[in-house]
Image 1 (cartoon, rainbow, N blue to C red):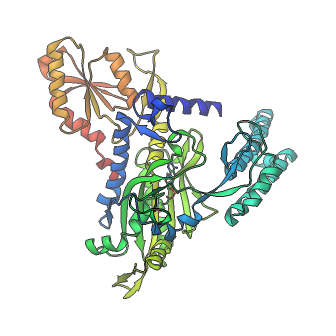
Image 2 (cartoon, rainbow, N blue to C red):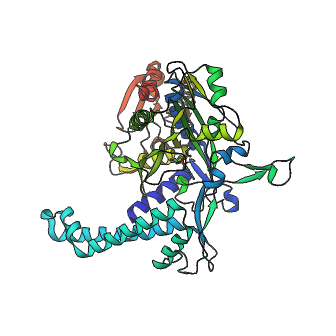
Image 3 (cartoon, helix red, strand yellow):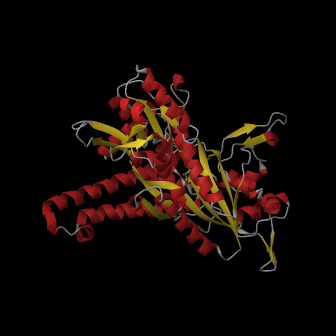
Amino acid sequence: MSQQNDAFKKLVAHCKEYGFIFPSSEVYDGLSAVYDYGPYGVELKNNIKEYWWRSMVQMHENIVGIDAAIFMHPKTWKASGHVDAFNDPLVDNKDSKKRYRADVLIEEYMDKIEGKINKEVEKAQKRFGDTFDEAMYRSTNPRVAEYQQQFDTIKTRLATAMSQGDMAALKTLIEELEIADPDTGSRNWTEVRQFNLMFSTQLGNIAGEEGKLYLRPETAQGIFVNFLNVQKSTRQKVPFGIAQIGKAFRNEIVARQFIFRMREFEQMEMQFFIPPGTQKDWFDYWKDMRRKWHLALGTPASKLRFHKHENLAHYADAAEDIQFEFPFGFKELEGIHSRTDFDLGSHQELSGKKMQYFDPERNENYVPYVIETSIGCDRMFLAMMSHALTEETVPGSSDEGNTRDVLRLHPALAPVKAAILPLKRNEDRLVGKAKDIFNQLRLSFKVQYDDTGSIGKLYRRQDAIGTPYCITVDFDTLEDNTVTIRDRDTLVQDRVAIDRLEDIIRERVDMKQLFA
Ligand code: GAP
């Protein structure tokens, strides 16, 4: 666990040191759960968005994009159910004045029980060595069985209380388990109450409740309310999809784990409109497509898993998460939801405007059903960074014994595709030649010229930001128009003609390979 913590702390520090992510308004000590993307961060984030956008909109003839406004008519959120049901159970500690999510406090208690079970298993494993049968031990050891029963009972009670919105039951559970404020140890809790996660603000020209606006908590609703506009203007036929990338806002009570849970974040969402009754097949189709999208980036299958929702959101008849193994364990990266006709149906009802589609094949009108794929851009960023950041001993003769931090991002996502480095910075002819190469390559790729240190230091810096190639200009270059090109991962250095550089770089960084 502490090794995981160390890895995570290192990642956060790396993101700041190398200009990927900064705390928001840091000069004022930051704003909790709000972050800014720095120069390399924004490049990586843009590449993630481009990969997603192109794989949806460019690679599917029947998916089109939109960019809806963040502000929407307040009735949108009434119809979507967010005004009434987008709540988390909140509990305050009267002594520390700190706020917690009641369900998270209980889950953390359950984590501790799980930790105890794992400790017992580990101890037994050491004791019995190769002959250890873990399944047998878990089912027969009395102490483990007792912990497991305790765990299962709490899990059931929590799930029931959550699905029934029973705040009193959550409070009782907290009291019975004697859960204390993690910071102060105080057990002096308020009642548990529902807390709506939407941020609200006010329209300039209307006073009071009438003018109350919400910052969208999901981008999906901008798609739903535009369903007919898009369908009619593009003459798409069901099944078809609408994709959108944009900011979403949630007043999260517990905002931790860096950019994993933020109050302002970005979503990449696609709503796929389908005939009623076909949702099971399309749900499976999109599960498979989205898994492949992740695998294409080189993410090992062992780091991804599906997790079926037991408590379905108010709009869904099926939902699964794609979980990723973050440094703090497997957590939700993306959601795939079968949203039925809930959203279009509710907008139709509240607006009084028809949300129906005439299906020429079925010769009938219906409100389409929807399969949604929804992934947080920031979470995807965190997943990619945490998987990519590696500390390793440098192989190869010249660097032997040294360690390096290398960001093994997929080259198509790397913020900088190649760095052009003159062997000596105060040698005009080398600098001039390196700048010529830089000026030529910048027409095609995001490249960087750097002469601010020794070659060894420049290599280290490029490794740390994930640059797939370093191109070194030396005295031979002046004679024969060749350069050394160094591979970030293998550290192999090849001598190549300058006019081959563009092809070599393109072959590795082009997103085309991801779509294949
Ligand atoms: N439209 C459906 C929807 O919004 P969700 O599971 O609440 O579903 C979808 O969110 C994705 O958005 C999540 O899988 C996660 O990647 C991202 N996400 C949600 N809340 C977030 C937060 N507070 N900070 C960062 N990302 C978040």
